[in-house]
Length: 372
Image (cartoon, rainbow, N blue to C red; front, side, top):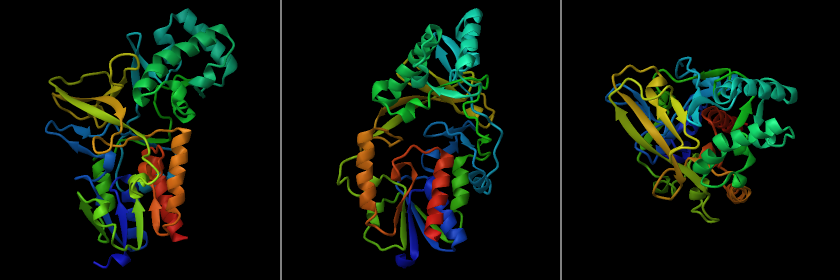
C-alpha cells in the first residue's frame, strides 16, 4: 500500500465514518480507517444481546436534529422510528417530567399554588421558551424566587455535583444552560424537527458508511503504530492532547461508568431514562428496550455513575468546559496549525461537547474545507 495516496482516518465513530465515507464516495480517494477499540461506532456502539434487546453500550443515544443537511445525509444509511425522548426524575419522591415544565409544576405543588406560579411565570417570560436556571434566579418576586431555588436544589444542584464532580459555581454557563425551566407543557426532552432511533441500531449505520470499496478498516489499531508513515491527509478524531504526546499537559474530561443489570420482568421503570437528582450515587437509569420497542420477557438496565477520567483506566466522555481548559486546548490548536495535512474533528479532536448531529455536521464541514 502506497500510503502517500491514502487518507488516514483515526477513529471509527460518527465523525470518522462520515469523513471517510465522503472522501471515498465523493472524491473517489482511498481511505484507511483505524480504531483502538475492537468495534466500530465509537461511543454510539450498540448490539443485540441474548434477550433480543438492543443495548447501547456507552449510554443512551437519541438522534435529533433541526438540520435538513444532516438529516438527509444520515437517511442514506438508515430509516428511523418515530421515538421522541422523554425524561422523568424523582423530586421529593414524585416521578415527574424533566426539564422542569408546567406539568412538573402541577405534579410537585398543590394546584392553587401551581396555578399562581404559572400565571406569574407567564407575566415575566414568553410561553414555550427555555429559561436557564441561573437566569431564573434573578427574579425579584418571592414566589418566583422560591420556585427558582426549588428547581436549583432539586434538579440542578445535586445532579450537577454528581455529573461534574464540582459545585455548580465551578461549572461553565454552557452546562447550566442545558438545565432550563421550560415554559411549556411539552414533555419531550428535545424539540428538534427530526428525532428517532435507527431501526437497525447505530452500529449498522456506521457499518454502512464504511462499506465502500475505497475504505479499508482496521480495528484494534493504535495511531502510534502508523505515525511514522506518510499519508495524503490525516483526519484525527482522537484526543488532540494525546496526538501531541501531552506536551502542554492533559486536557481534563469526565468519564462515565455503567453498571448493567438484567431483570426477569417486562419493564423495570416507566420510561427509557429516569433521573435521580437527589438520591443515590448514580445520576440516572437507562432501560434500553423502550428505544426500539423490543419484545422480551426480560429487561436490561444500566445505572450511570459519573467519575473523573483517568488515563488508561476509563473512557473520555465529556470535555470539561472551563476557561483554563479552553486556554490549554487553544495551545494544542495553535500547535496543530503547523501540520498542514492534519485535520482534527469530533468531541475529542475539537475538545467540544457534540451531539451526534453536530458531529456529523462538523465532519461534513471539514470535508468541504478539504474540497476548497
